[in-house]
Image 1 (cartoon, rainbow, N blue to C red):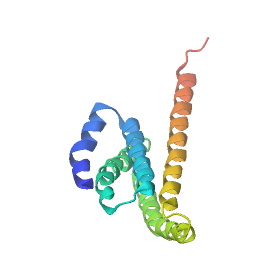
Image 2: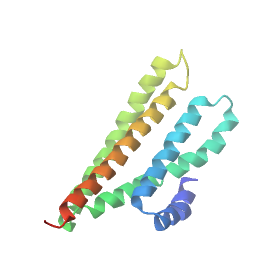
Image 3: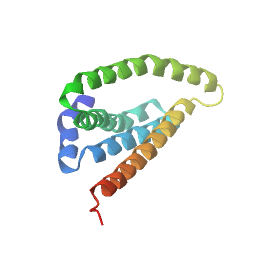
Length: 147
């Protein structure tokens, strides 16, 4: 399902809007899916949620494209190396951290781990939106004509 979203829907969203909107839409889809996952009571309920999770997969390629556009040609290799390193680090740290959280919270409620992930997405979305606003303010200040 992720491949279908990457092949057909991610490009359409990116063409219709821009990378910034694509990033926010992807993060909102992932965060919403995490909230739904925290509330699931039956196994079959995961299937509709997979659509949102697949929708969330559009954010990272758009984010990588946005970062790549901000770096000059000489530093593209460094950027890609950092991104691969971060991906590998989160691939190790994330499962360890969240399996630990899941173990601690399982006795109370098995949805805590998903809800914590959703809360992290909320903070991420707020951070990105505030970053976009502040970068627009900087552009206005820099491009303002001298009086």
